[in-house]
Length: 443
Image (cartoon, rainbow, N blue to C red; front, side, top):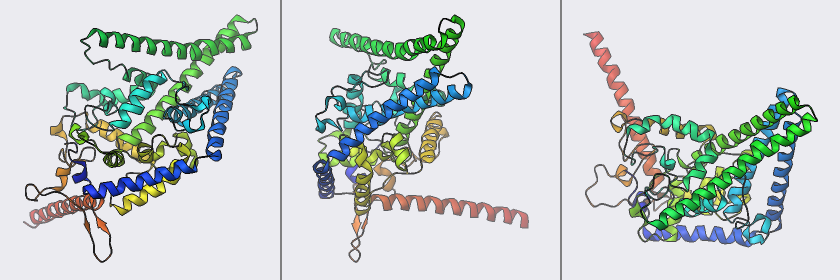
């Protein structure tokens, strides 16, 4: 099922992993030493751009007398919310700009335009998810307690609704994120645990109330006052249009955020791990788990910006507190390390990665008896056992180095060999079937 021995799965020795960790530490040191004015200018310009975009969006909504203006305002507001959540809120709360010592962009002071209180997000995401990335039973982001995304999750009839659940989750993603910290299905037996839940519930209720009041009462009321000017009927119409535009803006932000996050965590090649992997995990081993458990998607400057630079999810998981605008250059060096150690660098186009995520969600809504491949060698679920067929018991997987070229043959080569073997078997089956038809026709 999930990976139980990360070094063996990666075909790396302890010394290999230590060397990989040292090279990744060197990348961090280089970026930290080079942070400066251009990075500070980037984040300040992003804040100005986002705030200007939100003003334009709300202005279009306020003055919308035509359907086209309503759509333009809702779309512009949606983009402003995406930038605020993805490139600002998410990254600022990771502490990527704390080195500036500017209270405006400090992880301890930022409160984002989202129903999830920032303090809750920093615990569930920054601490739990990034520390225990894709570790079953520890990282709630593996399915969000709602979806079946790996065969390690035992199938229940509830999962027949996988596609419907994710559709609803995408549309209302901000509320799913707000509920995540609450762990609603968890049993709380002690008075202390119950009191903590009540405090967290109040915090979420307060934040949800503020967000709904801002988007669906205050701004629509202002739009009604501006448009109405004594005409009650006209004011009500403007209120209604502003409220629905805000709903659409939030839906746009929610669906986009869901897509970006799912592209980084659920396509083929984003591996899952067991708690056993956490025993005495070193920093280099943590780096390796982040590299194996994350996925990127191809992006130019615009798509990278609109995704909060999470098109470089692998790099973000290795260096969650380094400035997001530096991830593109970091990715060049990380990809080179993957080449050197023959590790996969999981990436693809944005539509392809998202489609793979939906395919996994659809496929795993069914019981395992209807699925092909094995639980150790499926696109969405793999373990070191996928490589061990035919090997003697107790043999550990390891990379080899060609003495003439110095090229390492490890995990990526092993995965490619498995894929080639599957293609060969498929070709033989097709050929055998064609030969059988020819024999029947000849008879």
